[in-house]
Length: 299
Image (cartoon, rainbow, N blue to C red):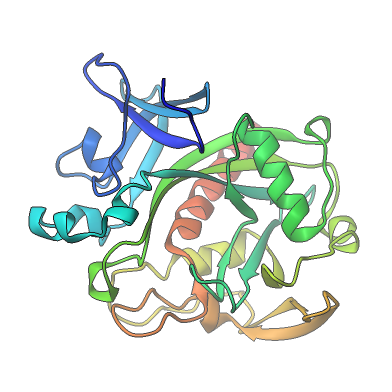
């Protein structure tokens, strides 16, 4: 039996035994020919992250961007991807939407020195390591990136959805180099965002800024749909500037104002990327809003 060196995505359909996903195939497209979103069942066992089909209403949403490179990649283009890239398979990541007691969620800006998605706002997260559970991996990444030390007993966890992430995010910006399925987990805490903020000690090699967003700000962010043209209409009641915590190279926090327009930037079709909220993060924040609305209905 081949030795497992990292967690990879495996796919199962029509009751066929799970097979390791190929780097150059669309994970979402494996389950639907035309749509960009589908429900699947997922499990992490024996260091395999397996996705399989399920009946509607009984699974977890899996989504890709409308401009996902693997949706449009030709057979010839796929074959031209270097073998060392193709051999990577499809990695598994976890991202944590940490919700405070006063219903705010933590976003972090990736350091400018990072090769993948620099200066982009995302929830804390990273790769799932061998023999880790999703929750344990998420809490580890949260601790490593932000300094927040939470135990599984300190939070209630919920899997919100799955995102097919590709870098670069569209073919017009280059051939795919990385391919992940990101699991977005919602963690509810009994601490307010002020209490959590007091314990923040971000790792400057990974994080250059921190921001707590509430529902009104999230609605403004997700209104800027990546892949669409036209200006974003400002939402009533949302301030034009947002207070963020900047992280110095020494890891010291200082407050500054960030224009709301930066958080509403869309993914560019060409050239250098811009500071923005990632497309996958917008998807996760939309799921978070729906979850909040559901909580309000039950109350």
